Image (tube, rainbow, N blue to C red; front, side, top):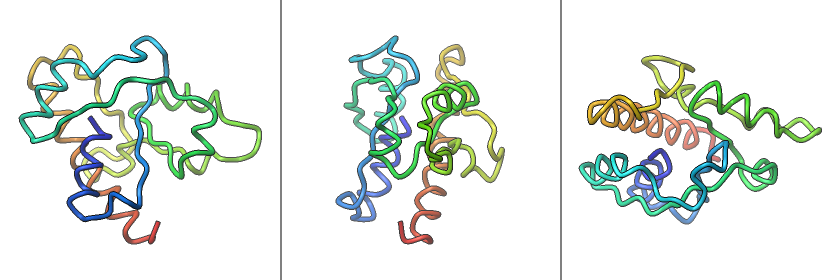
Length: 141
């Protein structure tokens, strides 16, 4: 969902050509699958069409992307375990680093939260993605 939200923000600002955005999981459990149907339903309510299929995070992602943004401490640990020997840790942030309400906490897993859980996560991600965009705009990245 974060990928779709951030793409919408940069496309609305006519900057899609300046970004490469991709999402990945920290396991291959759902590799090749579309997002959960509840995620798709919630995204559609907000005008998003999510077409990304799951793929696992790989070590080369550190070299292919300027920033690696994870959703929670578990993801952070899993991605840290793939960190190459050279110091690229500066690229690794939690999504809620960009949240003024609950800075650096975990994005909750909506799996057991019903419709409200998916909406809550959408609102968190929307807020964080907007703040990420503002941060990148101010840096000129």
